[in-house]
Image (cartoon, rainbow, N blue to C red; front, side):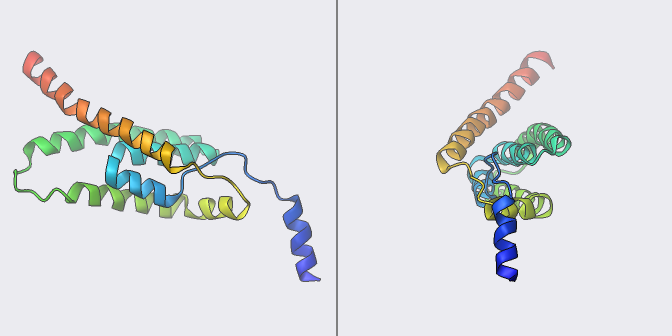
Length: 147
């Protein structure tokens, strides 16, 4: 009887129409492409979950923190271990996803919702890397020419 009730209930559950990014995809983007890619993917998930305030706040924090992180690169010693920043990006993205999205991602998967593929994540990561490489040169240009 209980199985029959669960079956009837599951028939009437809606299959999510929005695609989202998996936690694994977000963490891989954080490691390989940095905070800009991870923040964007997390914000896109918030939008898919109809949480526009968290999506907007995530993008704001991402766009404010990225230039700060680039600025830090200019002042750290040359022998500073390079793995620290990717590890930091992964840690932050992992904690944000774990706290705010993990249950929703699992629920999305259980209901048969789709996830974006690796190629889309790769493209977003490449765009993020290009923007991340342009940013330091832009900051340096502004400093050299206006200050």
